[in-house]
Length: 132
Image (cartoon, rainbow, N blue to C red; front, top):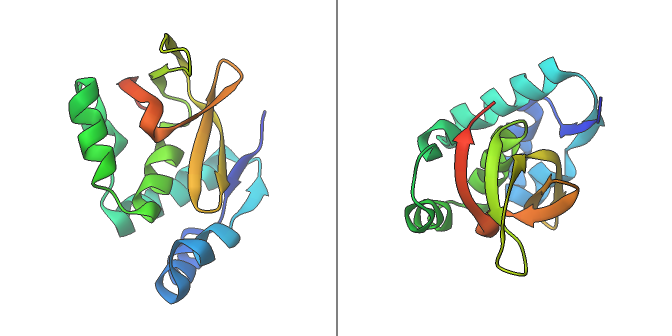
């Protein structure tokens, strides 16, 4: 099982309250427990009001409009919720790639996830078919 980037929800929420996204991002640690990942995601969803299920079935333009209105910490929460979901992304060549979102990474407060071994940002997300 690939490790996910996770942290206890209370710790991340406290860090975010004190220092914003940078502090929350620096509080992330690596763990391999799916249960830890689910608890952390649920904590972020509760504290940031983001639910990936709301994106299922949205057209690409509506999806990008919703994503662009999110704060940095909400984008991180959303990307974490997408791990394990079936998504369609647009690669650099403009082609659609469908697959399972996996291996979340956060660099300088910007989340990316992998689909078919390639990294994608939320701005490249075209659709969400099923959330985990």
